[in-house]
Each structure stands twice: as structure tokens, then as C-alpha cells.
Image 1 (cartoon, rainbow, N blue to C red):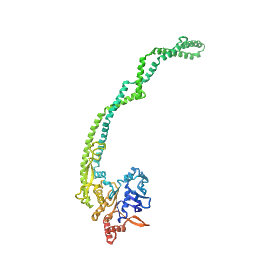
Image 2: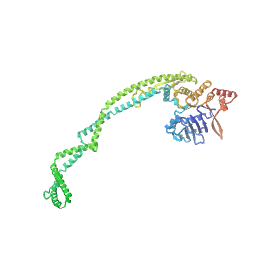
Image 3: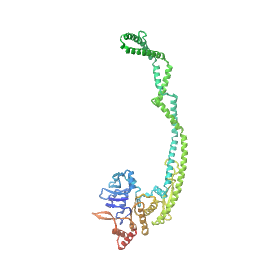
Image 4: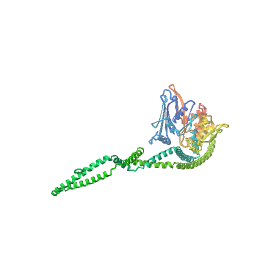
Length: 565
């Protein structure tokens, strides 16, 4: 509910502050006093456009502030980042400058008009001629019918089954669309696998081949160098290293007989001799193995070329080439099983389509029954609102079963039909959609009837603003409208704010505000004040008497007020 409202510099309003009550609040006053300006100020909070021309002459900007007291609304503001966990109230400020620029703040946080409209979309509703009302939106009508008939579980079942069907449809379509691409990919992978497997590289082969290639490519130089090394060891011609070492050992043995401390050196020389013998034998074997074989060299070079081509395409090492080979083998296996998997998915989709179709059929049948019940209930409600000749109906309009991609589906996400409220205002007229069938007071009264019928389904507490709801009615009908407004305000903690010219409605309110205007300093100003006691009796008497308060009008006003208790 709106607990406090403050308006500054809007049209005829210089500055006013109101403390609003829960329940039914009425605003009365003479024609032209500024009642609709006040209602427009409240409506501006819901995101409705406010013209810069509405800014009071001489002021830079018009400001509307409202303090909301609503836990669901506060939670919604937190979800939108417009309130913190520490906030216990919601202060909405909307500023409209004369230059056309505007500013919105919620609990001190900057916002936008669109975000404000999203925040208050379900919490603040204006019911007046020309307004786009929440209850007139087709999706809201469908939701209210489903809630009226307690069809939520069936609707959710259809949505869940549709989501599962749609997910499979997307996967199947994706697989079909990529079938050619998958075939091209498989051909490419098989070509690459054949290249690798035809070469059949071994993990340590490359290093061994490079070593062998180096030996074969330089056999002459290797023969020359290792032969020279062998000559130096063997001493051909002349004493070689082995002979000189033997001579050194002979001299050392003579010295060892004189000094045993040379034994370590003698052992070192012996080890050196053995190493030289091994080196000499190794060189002899190496020289014997060297063989200038051009054909073998060509084979090694060809093998190296094959391996290096694989390196250039599939990895810098043989190990990485083999790892790539294993990966593409796995991918080929997966691609090869694609058609079988698609067939499995299609079979599963057919099962889901049957389940979805069955659930949608059950929902349609239930909606038809609930639609008839709602229409009958509404028809009874309209009898007491001076719309007894109007015919209300709920039409189940077929929904396209095509997805946004153009695929045929068993139904839409919300079923095979969309419930829509229709009205024939007078006998002989063709029924039309609710938004097209009524205007002005008729529309407001019709929506009041809907509100009362659907109050059990739409139970979130909110603020409802009614304007022109009493157009063209009086007497008993006016009293019934007032009773329904009061009942609506009493159910689920709705706060109802109603502009009215009818004393029967004003007398039923929990809070009564009088709008008047006066001239101060050559400027016309609108003032709003709460009236209680004798002041309220006088205001209702004025409404009864058409402006002149008479003793009879006072007595009648007191009687109306006593009947409303």
C-alpha cells in the first residue's frame, strides 16, 4: 500500500502531502478541482508518461514521492537491485523537469522509468479511461483463468513437457543440419588417420634415424678421424699411446720397489691402460662397421622426410603425432555413430510429443470447463453493476503450434489455446475482446467485477486506482459498486483509491479525501485534505444536494454513513 504521498509543482498542485489508509480511500470534490491531477500523480509512479507541460508554471520540475509499505514489493525491489536487505520501506521518487528530462530514484538509488514500471507492474494498477490495464493483457487473462480454476499444476506440466520436447527438437535439428559438415569432417579425419598410419611412426624412432643418418652421411670423414685416433693409440708407425703407457708402467714398477707409496699411481696407470685397450678395440670395431651404403642412406632420408611431414602437420614430436592419431580415432568413432544416435533421439522425441499432446488435451478440456464457470460467475456479478444486459464470455483462442524456428510442435508452451475475455456490451452486438468492447465507466465497472470474481486467484496485495467507475450510474447501482469496492479493498489487503462523484460510494470508504481549489497570490492552487466527522457529513451532503448543503442533505448524509458502518 501507499502509506504516504507527496506531490509538488504538478499542474494545479503546488505542494501537498497525504497519509493514505489501507482499504478503500475515496477522493471527492467539485468538477475541475484537480482530482484527476492527483490520480495522475499516483499513476506517474507506475511508469506512465508525464508531459513536461504538466510542470507547474514557474517551477523547474514536478516531483512525486510515494512511501510504499509492502513486503512483496520490497522483495521485488531487492531482486531488481533497487533495495537492500536493510531497507524496511520503499520510497519512490519521480522527478519531471520542464526541459523534458526526468529522474527516478528508489530508496536513494537511481533508476529508469522502464525499471520503475517493471517494479510496480503488478503492485500499482490504474483503472481509468484510456489506460492500458494489466487485466486487459491477454497473458494476464490466461493466467487469471488458470488460477481461478486452480489449473497451475496442469499448466506447469505442459510447460515442462514442452521444454523437454523442444530441447530434443533443437538437438535433432542441429544434428540434421550438421550432417553434411559431419560427413566432411569424418572424411578429413580419415584422410589424416591414413597418413599417420601409413607412416606408422614409433615413439623413439626419430632420434635413432637422425643419429643413423648423421653416420651414413659422413662415413668418409668418420673413417678418417677414427682411423687417425686408432693410429695414435696403436703407434703405427712409431710408438703410440698404448706403447708409451706400457713404458711408463715399466719405469713405475722399478720405482715402486723402492717406494711403496707409488702404488696408487701405479693402479691409476693400470686402469688407464685397460681403458686405452677398450677404446682401441672399440675404434677397431667402429671402423669395421663403417660402410658407405648410398641405398641405405636414401632409405633413411626418405623415412626422415615422411616423419618430418607428419611433424609439420600433426605435432612437433612423434609422441604428439601419436596422441593426435588417438584423438581422431575417437572422433571418427563418435561421428560414425551419429546416425544411430539421431534415430534414438527421434524415437525419444516421438514419445515426448505423445505425452505433451495428451497433457495439452487434458489442459484444454479443463480450461473449457473453468471458462464456462467463470463466464457464469461474471454474468451474475455484472447484474449488480448496471451491466445486466452485457454478455461476458471466455474464448479459448487457438495458438500456433509452430516454434519460433518454424518447426511443428504438438502445442505451444502454454497449451493449445489462449484464454481471452470477451464482451458484448448490449444485446444484438457481436462479442469483442475486452480491450475493444468497453469504454470509460463501463470498462472500469467491468474490471471491478473481474476483480471481485478473480480476487481469490489474484491475491497479491496491491494498489488499485479507479477513475470514472461511477459514470452514468446512481442509486442502488452506485451503492452496489461501493460495496464491491469496499469488499475488494477488504480482501487480501488491497488498497483501493477511487475518484467518485457518488455519495453512496464515498460513504462506504474507510478514508475520505476532499479536493478543492482556491486562489492565492493570483495563482490557482489545488488542495487535498482528509475529512472526518462533521466535515465528512458536509462533503457527502454537498454531493447529495449538488453543491448546496441543506439540513435534509445532512440528514441523508448521516444516514448513508451510518449504513456503511
